[in-house]
Structure formats: structure tokens, C-alpha cells
Length: 147
Figure: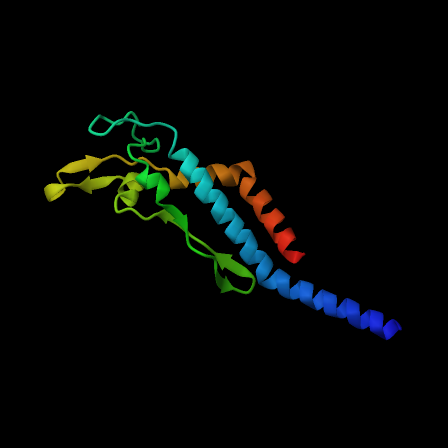
């Protein structure tokens, strides 16, 4: 009888250990990425303006919405393992102009137009991290994945 209980507990602990090494960290990273996408989309919804009018977004602030294409293009890559119990995912915009809005730079014919940086990804990530939101989301997802 005692051997049966010991075997059952051992099997349960091994299953828990396996989930803690793979499924749980993956779930935590995926939850953080989903939170980052949602928060970035909110960040990109703060101001708007009609086409062919000057943007009300000052340099350093997130770009204003014209069509919503940039906001809709924010996605994450599925988490991938990068080491023992370590997973990574990326968040970004898929439209061609996503990067220049984030970092600023030269654009247009002969690179004659300078766009100032209007970051939206980095400030969102910093705010989520500083607020403890990412940690809370990760812990909740990790715990849920353990079953």
C-alpha cells in the first residue's frame, strides 16, 4: 500500500516537474506576449486624425491613428525555447512603416523626409514591466499550466 502511494506521488511530482520545465514557462511567455499586444493596441488608440491632415502626436508620443492599420498589425510570435526552461516571444507591427514610427528616420523619395520617433512598443513594454503587470500575468499563466 505504501509503495503504491509513493509511486503515485512520485509519478505526480515527475509530471509536475515536466510541466514546470516546458509547458508552464511557455504559457507564461505567451500570456505576457498577449498582454503586450493588447496594451500596445491601446497605446496606439490614444489619438487620431483624418487622412491628409497633420498628426497631433508630438515627437516622442505614439503615432496617431489614421486608418488603424498599424494598430491592427501588432502581433506576437509564438514562444520558442531558448534554453532549459526558457522561452521567448516577440511583439511587433507587420506593416512596412511600423519600424520608422518606433525609431524615426529618413523616408520618401531620396530619403528627403525625416520622421521623428514616435515610439509605441518600448514605452508599452516599460510601463507593463514597471507596473508589475507582466509578472502578475506570467505567474497566473504559469500556475494555471501546472494544473
